[in-house]
Amino acid sequence: MTDKPFLISNDALQDPTQLRQRMTEHGYVFLKGVAPKDDLLNLRRDILALCADAGWLDPSRDLMDGIWGGIGPYTEGNPEYMAVYRHVIHLDSFKALPEHPALTGIMRHLTGDPLLVHRRKIGRMTFPQNTKQTIQAHQDWYYIRGTTETYTMWMPLGDCSMELGGLAVLNGSHKAGFIDHRRLPEVNVAYALESDQWPQAEGVEWHASDFELGDVLIFHSYTIHRALPNRTENLLRLSIDNRYQREGSDIEPGSLGTHYDL
Image 1 (cartoon, rainbow, N blue to C red):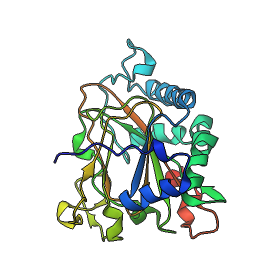
Image 2 (cartoon, one colour; image 1 turned 120 degrees about the vertical axis):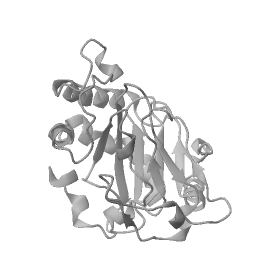
Image 3 (cartoon, rainbow, N blue to C red; image 1 turned 90 degrees about the horizontal axis):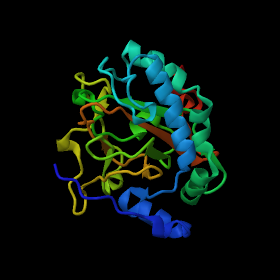
């Protein structure tokens, strides 16, 4: 599976109409360097401190490098992972970042005013050498419901090469609408879309790129996307994804609570 690079949409940042047209055409917009870097690094430091306390990191290495110490690997759903994650989602830095004006300003271009930021904010700590648990292709609407005009903003908390594992999106796949998901019992994310379910049309192809600190990927709730596996030897990948919609439109009650109600 060969991914083409993301289409960069920074040129449309000052033109909400053009930015919405990019989203309508591709199902995503990729923006370089728009997220507040100091806030990202502060959150990275806070999360890695929790990982270090849990014994996940190599204590001989610099904390901010996120060097795995060999315990695990753990993933979402494992008791060891959830014990740390319970603290992550209550960090002040974690809760505040999605509300930063640099990010909400961009999202208002897509949703209009007034903007609603989902309270169910999600973070991920992705271990190396755990590729079997990589999140498979899916549409976010399967999990979040509510209005289809909900958008996810995904960003890594640091530079993120494709080897470290970012996100890939199926360009234009949102135009096919919602597709029933299948149960995949071998991975912790229980439902996904398999390759025979992906829409087949001209221009519907996988896009992915390296991320630098401050880059963000925003996509529609129907856009098919998947995680890339963390193929590094010893690096922990940290990322967050948050969801936005126009206030007053339909919302599932679960989006009003914390992730896993932790």
